[in-house]
Length: 284
Ligand code: NAD
Image (cartoon, rainbow, N blue to C red):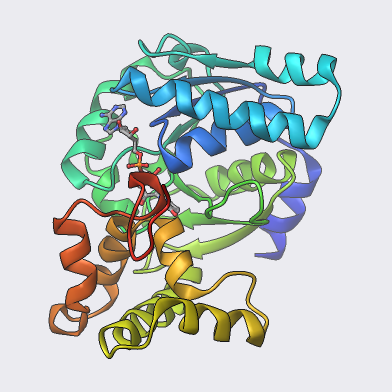
């Protein structure tokens, strides 16, 4: 770990172009953050209509952080909507942030691997799928590394750098260097369920959901957590993360019978949290 930290600091890897696949909650905000940090970014999604809202959110971030028109415009120019994925072959870093689904991710990796530039960093933002499972679809499985950003990307300092069984130490070091380049703190972790942060966080979110089902109102639970010193209450945090993402992480960490029904029901109803307009709370 010490070696990894120092390698990350030496700037052995200084990418200029990033390609992000998946323009949802995470991919859109990761792309925006990288453009803010002076990288050229192309943003791809299988549903091209997901790209425009992500670019709009990015504009909001640039306005807030950069204040004056010229740097804001320069950052906008660095962030390219790329519905056909033309930026992939030129990218120094590829970040996959599509649905949390094994088959979808594996077939994406299979399709893109031959098009990647030699030496490009190949990263996934998966929260819960073992790197080893995703790497099965690659001919160079040693290349895949996890870059696990947290939501909201612009606020959360930490990025877990996930090592799969086959991941080369060099790729871990390059991922750490990239993470530092974009002003974030790399935390190396092994590809075990929940990595580190979600292993701690998920039981907390599930327990808060259980309290809801026992009849304690969400705002009461959230206010108690805020009074305790948390920046956001657990019910709102679950909505922010996305209830589908919470469930997929919980399923890796918790026996099925211990996962609160409330969570499953919300998802069945299409209420996924802030991204769908409602979850445990309403956002419209
Ligand atoms: P999301 O549902 O908001 O966005 C996923 C996007 O991927 C959608 O816009 C979808 O159209 C697109 N997509 C799906 N399949 C695609 C394909 N084959 N090619 C191109 N685009 C495709 O999901 P999200 O919350 O942004 O999560 C994305 C990833 O990030 C997941 O792996 C998730 O586990 C991980 N993650 C999520 C959070 C969180 O708080 N939401 C935090 C850390 C990591």
